[in-house]
Picture 1 (tube, one colour):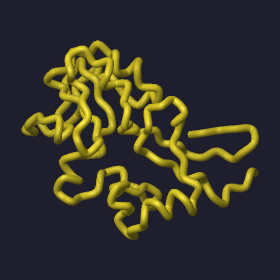
Picture 2 (cartoon, helix red, strand yellow; picture 1 turned 135 degrees about the vertical axis):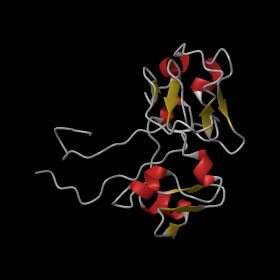
Picture 3 (spheres, rainbow, N blue to C red; picture 1 turned 90 degrees about the vertical axis):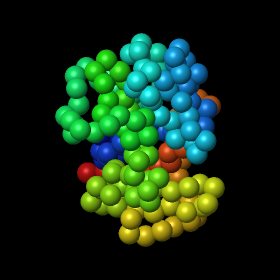
Amino acid sequence: LFRSEDTSPYWFPKPCFHCDAPACVNVCPVGATFKREDGVVLIDNERCIGCKFCMAACPYSSRVFNWKKPGLKPDANYSPESSVPQKIGTVGKCDFCPDSFSSGVLPDCVTACPNGVYYFGDKNEDVVTNGVEALRFSDLVKNKSAYRYMEELGTRPSVYYLPPVDRAFP
């Protein structure tokens, strides 16, 4: 929740930003954090040694250390492309549900949002969708004054935010 003296509070989710220049990839001593050709940044928990260098390097604080075993299906086979199951003593993060969108299904954050405010798509194809409507990415960025959080750091984040509208300060 984002709060300020000058505005009413609003939710400000901070997933992994899947940066074009990810600092987390550069600091991983074992190559467990990597960037796919399509821009998605993933973690191979089989290679991760839990050093937390990637956590320190991420300016968005979007990584978490797995202190205990996540409550997942026991029969799930591990793959960095499926995001489950992660291991105790490794680092995890939002991975944009790569197993879903590679099969044409939107990530869980998009489908679970009751307000339809998450859009997912391909900047190069200039299309995004929230599961209900499809929009041109370029129009959405231009007409809604989209911005990238802390882009001045040079990481070139792939997540864009649309400023809240119609929020009157109480």
